[in-house]
Length: 497
Image 1 (cartoon, one colour):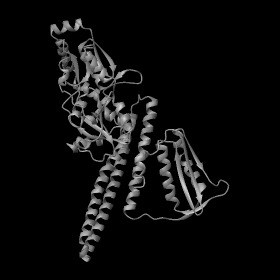
Image 2: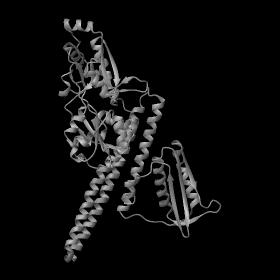
Image 3: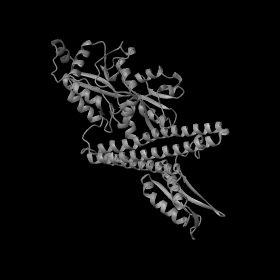
């Protein structure tokens, strides 16, 4: 099951299950026809904060996969269905109090059946858990017994959480957006809900520090809960749902789950990048295996020559084996790191192929593709640097160079990126009038300062980044200061680990 879950997350696909009835006309009995004529309008409540299933767009319109399916039901009934959007808690309460005729996307839980009847399912979505990427391996909720997990109030996920982790570690929220805000501020450790909305929010907001860590098959589907004081309402609704064709369901699914016509140019570009990354990972794996084999040979020879140190050598062999295990953990983590920008590149490249896409969204999606590409390039550079260090091929090449000129070059290189975020990038020089020459490895100093400046831009929303140096006798100290969020106190001790 975990292998299937990882495959689902890798390709970024959300699977919905649909009934496969053949197309047929809706046939109502005379009693049902009378009921429909006496009820020309019904009102359904719906959660307006649950993209891409049901939510309110920028124009204040209710849209989403479930909304399109409700409109198909409306067409088959031949009457008007009015949708009232609100938070999930308010929508469910209205339906339970019979203030409306029903609620969309409700699970048939036992505690609801004394007030509501439930239609057959119109979609089905797996459950998923989102957490920080620092949680390297998540095998299940056993790993979250001492961590805080959020779920929507009055949801089936909340009930399932209460059976899996201690109640004091469960945080109830009104919307998923509230939960993601808590997670990004490290006030909780995870979010449990349907896979579709979790994946949609992650993809649309580009939260690169988060991941989908666990996916579970669900026995529940997306049903409509109807007031139980009118049995005829359930009968006509089920007939209308049953008459939605497979083609109509598939069309609605492809519209909202982004499985449409692919721009094959961008597809092949993304495929080429994937192959390139795969080759890098294979090279990295080969180099690590060579290092492990070399160290194992050395330790074996030493064991034969120095029998009296057998105990110490045995511990050293265990250390080499631990390096091999760490290598596997690194490769698993790197695959997650690579998937995030790759999903951004492939997903939003596909969305850019929509000829009706608004210019605002086109510019936004293009920026996400560029940012994802830059993140991917950064990961590739990190892999190459680590492989050189492991292979002991790093060399220090000293040369004489001028410090003021180096700072000007760096600021000019990052100026456009800083301006995009309304950040003022300043080079502060201790000696403006006369040049300052030092002897060191210019390439590595440039690399260190570039990483610091890039990181400062990433975590500064607006304000100032100042690059400077100070001279102390025969030494020089470089500084990169920013007005961003800074580093938490508990993380500062780990900076130089």
